[in-house]
Length: 210
Ligand SMILES: C[S@@+](CC[C@H](N)C(=O)[O-])C[C@H]1O[C@@H](n2cnc3c(N)ncnc32)[C@H](O)[C@@H]1O
Image 1 (cartoon, helix red, strand yellow):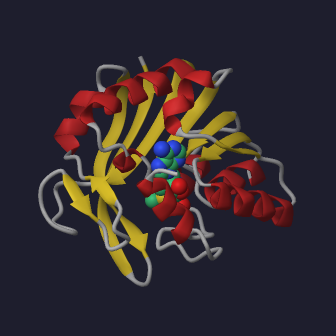
Image 2 (tube, rainbow, N blue to C red; image 1 turned 45 degrees about the vertical axis):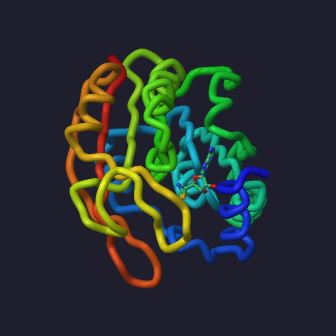
């Protein structure tokens, strides 16, 4: 198992312990649903962790597919879906195998996932793949840590307290990356919570497939 993969499996050793795992969906996602900006449709959640946000959407009438590389996270996600009495297609997959995914989605989101892709040469093909998997006019929501902040150091690649390296992109860099494939409906900086009680600045992009 590669080093980073092992670190995630270790973090997920205890259910609910990961510093980013919250059973309550983020207010930004709730807003998209409650305002009708996204309506019940086929969804793909990339890097879904313990699956709570996928479950939230499934509970609101969405047909949800969700994957993560961590076997532990996916086994918890399946249990959470069972507990919530909803059906979500959860499975283990590495994002580098996105090419193997069949079908099309109306809405794709990666909540705190894009910053896991450190290799600059892999970021554009990833976004290209998201674009490929969307129907015409499909929506894409991406939230990732922001290089505008000084959390955990400076520069693009920073090491989190979990010892995992993350990519801190700036709004303008991400804008350049996304606008090759998407019409950007809304871009802004938001605060995302991290346990025990901090907030981290993140890039929020809500987009439509070009
Ligand atoms: C910061 S967590 C966010 C999880 C979830 N979206 C949430 O907000 O709770 C990042 C997730 O990406 C997953 N991940 C990291 N590298 C991955 C890869 N190469 N392919 C798929 N998932 C990956 C991790 O296992 C972890 O669950």
